[in-house]
Amino acid sequence: MKLEVTRELRAAELGIGEPGLRCMAVVLSPHCGSCIAIAEAFRGGAPEAMWFVVLASGADPESLAVTENLDAVRGRLIVDKEERILRALGLEVTPLVLLFDRGLLETAYAVSTPRQVFDLIPTTKGSEVAVGGQTER
Image (cartoon, rainbow, N blue to C red; front, side):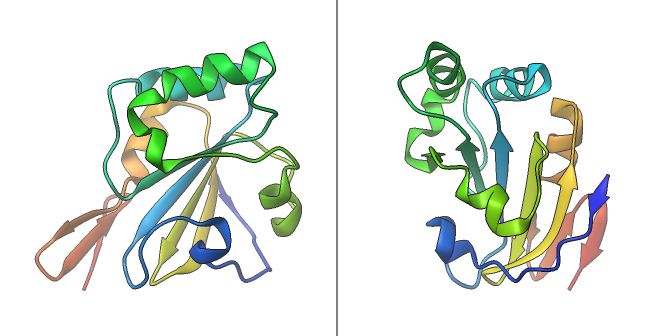
């Protein structure tokens, strides 16, 4: 489900992505069954344009289970202990996918399955960018 986001958010504020490129952040809670399933789906790795944010202290057992599933993307994993990302957006929902274009938040989606996350992964082919089944130039 596409969410209404009124605050401008830059990927650089989160420490993700590269300026000028499309990327996405998947925001997960270790206390959410859908979030755990999504983390497990990416156990073997994820595209370079994909980052993960886990909302919890890295010391509690549930957080460790989620972050261990994401070990293959360790360099693109952020543990957000204060839930600053959700607070900055005024949202209280996980799992959440944030899509960034040229460094700015473009769209946010509440998702519930790994398949929905896979469908939103940004892919680049030549000068076209395909996101969520739509192609843009």
